[in-house]
Amino acid sequence: MSAERLERPEPESDGATDLIVYEGELLDAADTTAPVRYVVTQHTMLAPGELPPRADERPAWGEHEFRLTDEDVADLDEPDLAENTVINRDSTVRAFTAWCAQQKPPHLSHPCTTTTYTRYGLHLIRLGKAGKYKPDSVGAYMSRIWNWQPVDLRPDPSHFKARLRAWRREWVAAGGEVKRAPAVTIGYNLRIIDATDETTSIGKRDAFLAALAYVNLHREMELADQLVKRVKVHPTGLFVTTAMSKTDQTGKGAGRFIEDREDLQLVRRARAWLDVLRELGADGPDDPLFRALTKKGKLRKYPEDRKRGQRMRPGSLNERLQVLAERAGVPYIDGKKVTSHSWRAGANTDLIAAGVTLKERNEVGRWAEGSKTADTVYDRTHGVGTRDPLARVPLYGGPAHAAVQQARASEASESPNGADHDGEGRGGR
Image 1 (tube, rainbow, N blue to C red):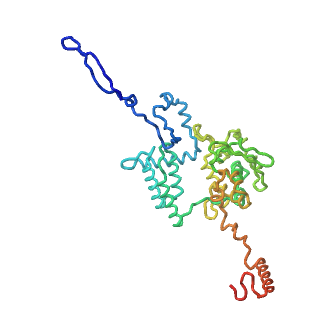
Image 2 (image 1 turned 135 degrees about the vertical axis):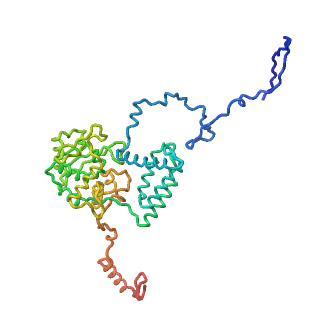
Image 3 (image 1 turned 30 degrees about the vertical axis):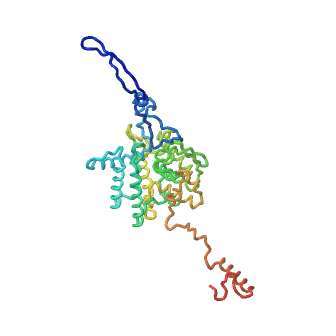
């Protein structure tokens, strides 16, 4: 603080001027300014003695730096997920939004609070306990809702996940089990292909579809999105590129050479189907590899504004493969309904039986590196199976046991007291 003497003239009523003196104190400059504000978030890290960033030192962005153009908005509106993923997400979001609107008073669904998120999760669990859902389904629904929320305002999922884990334990203990499609192994696949009439255009497509689904461990979406140019036919096999998959959303792509097999006859069947596409004028490099056909073998026509263009729906391919299995007399295997995923599981099951390593199977099946899914989920041996590790243990009483007994008898006869070295002599136990 500092003392200050302030003098200024003060007019009198009659026009004279007197000098008026004011005594006071001046505050230091630091005391007259507004307090400094610092910006600290959960991500702030400070070195010893370092101050947080000041609020008044943040970048001076202008309004124009926050505005998108109409073209930018249109580009951002383009979906960045697989079509099937978008369909499932939107369905889940609609159900969640409807539930929020039905609450009294209504809840905000986007962004939602942790309480709203947890309450909806508990609601689904209660429905699941009543038989409507399985634990894995509820977990998938809630994961979609969580990912749909704004990144910086996502709810805390830990409370819901704790209850989901508890319910899953109860569900398993009560006899619940996840229903998985059976494996269409090589024997079943050949039976299905043999039942296909390959003298027709539809039959040529179906036979190649079943063969390719097996040898490249395809998901139905990968088959539906496959293009003509991504299947190169060589005299000894096919080079197939899968441009995008569930574990490759960036479109990096994965290509592999698949050697021709005498049983599946990949090259012959690929050429037969590509010849059909050529006759139909649908063999352009960017044309879909699999096309929907009419009963007369002509191309099915779609509206020009159809979202998928000329590509078949993944669900249509699944239905087609199920039809082929039914015609071959195997709509069910081991009491489970065949689906398009059965071909993926069948090839992986056969690869395991042949001793192919997990690393190799992850590569050919486009599972994530280090994933155990090919072993824990897609190993679907038929019936009771034949791969029991205990079968490698020699039978007790067999040749090995006889050799051990003979050696012990020799040692006992040579011992001075007639006892075994391990103490199991006369009467020893």
